Structure formats: C-alpha cells, structure tokens
Length: 141
Image (cartoon, rainbow, N blue to C red; front, side, top):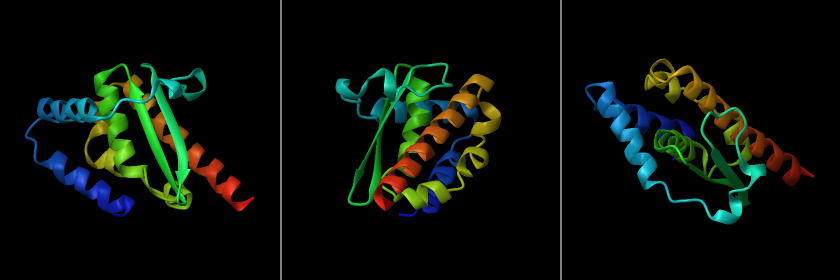
C-alpha cells in the first residue's frame, strides 16, 4: 500500500469513533500492540529530541526500503509512534521524504493533542524524515 492509502485507512478508522475518548482508547490500543524495541536499540543516540516522553527510534534499510522500529515508556506516545510506523515504515527514502502526512490533521490529532504531544509528534516525523534523507544519501553515494 502507498503512504496515502495507509493514511486514508487511518482516517477512515478514526471516523468510526464517536468521540475523542474512543479515539484515545484506539491510540492506546495501538501502543499496546506495538512490538517492543530490542534493548540494544534503546540508546541515547536513538532517543528523539523534542519529545516530552522518552521515545526511541531505530531505522534500517532493507531491500531499498526504510524499516522503522520504535518504543516509548508512555502508552499514548507509543500509540502515536505506532501510527507513524504504519504510515512510513517499509517505504523508500524518496517516498518518505515526499510524504505529506495529512492524516495528522484529518484525524483531528493536531487539534486534540496537548501542545507538548503535538511537538513530540512533529519531532518524530522530523527524525523519520532525517533517517530517510540519510539513507537516500548513503544509497546514492
């Protein structure tokens, strides 16, 4: 599936819920389902700067696609990063760099998250795009 198809699926899923309490429960559920990150990747270098909660992000290239893995101690943040992984992981660096992540606005996340969570989400996106750029440069080199 393309990045936009995955985003559209997320938007449709969010539309099924009647209120934000149900949407938060869904995000928390996503966080609970996210596989943990191997402890060897829970390093200072993999901590995303700008997040209120500790978030570890690990990226690797596999068959020309970027594979992201992440974890957080905060369950709601774990759910948010899980959505980003669904949307961006397993795509080429160019697809990630060109992605317009409109699902954040269309699901209402941007207006329903606390400012610190919103900033953290933006930091996660920024870091994922930075990894994509690094992998693009490495593969072109």
